[in-house]
Image 1: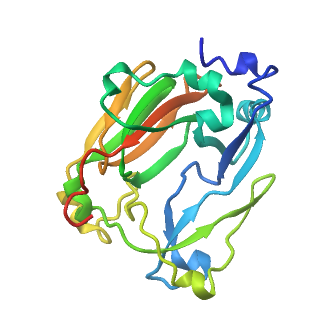
Image 2 (image 1 turned 180 degrees about the vertical axis):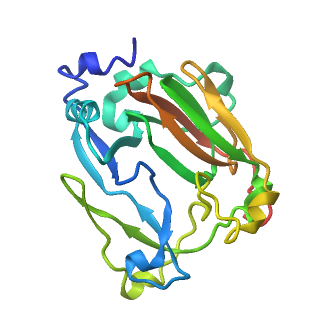
Length: 251
């Protein structure tokens, strides 16, 4: 009832401006091979999806439409984008009373989206509201088996409809390396490039409507979302808290 956003799209919530990411493949924040960005064969690029802002009502209309690109409301802080009233409708679970809260985020798409393998340095409670999520989890100690590497960062350019450009990474941007996300594509692992992946210990979690997962800081995770039935949406809220422990050795 709280999250019947489609029914309220013409009201106050529908008029709220939200931040929306766009993906060519349904994967977000993942690595790509260097030649796509004007770099060498051995290089990787951390790819950020294009972002735009629109009314929530317009996003919901796009999610109902058949589009080749994927639109995803991700990392939207509830108090910033959808108001304190809605934030109050999604209170942190009572069991989190001993944690130090940072922010509540809402995630909304029509499914078929994936957040590639990465870790966060926050304690995380992930609450599934509509649809389901499938997570592959690895403990912090598997860090060296999951191939995190420093890489240049690139941002796709997007133009409606389904038009994409990868601007060449040049000058100082080639040297400004960041470490975020694993080089491993768990949907199509390449053990020739990543042989230590076989030593990693994976845990699979299915998160259904009404369930909440506690994801400790520094646990590696890849998340795939599915809608609530044909033509449905996937909605989740997560709660980030300050971490309770130091990072494992080597991270």
